[in-house]
Length: 165
Image (cartoon, rainbow, N blue to C red; front, top):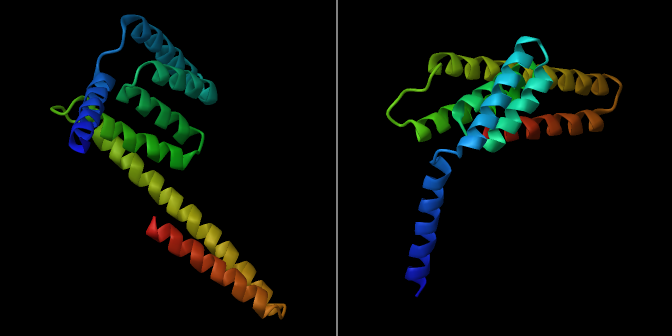
């Protein structure tokens, strides 16, 4: 009995996956395209937050990789580096899922963008860490060795956690 229910669940999940890849209804596609175009205009005008909102609405209607790329561009322009990396990686993954026989459009640029953003994030983390170390040294110089040690232990734990992620 368990194998039948497991097989049924597997079949439902597979069907759901294919349904997610199915073409959206023409009305949704038309509305999403309009939102995407509005987002493009807003982005070109420097209204990045408004453009992001249009792209997110379009993505709710139509799950297409190109919309993910536009969302990533907005997050990058808004200095939301972690979100930009997330959406760039999702763009590459979704492209392969939707178009397995075609290489992703702008693949070289997207991979370079991910690398640049991850480098920027690492530099930001390093600066934050250096600042915390300087604060710990300052505590030590003020005779607060116990507080300095606690601060350094916290830095160590944060660094270890970020390396393990």
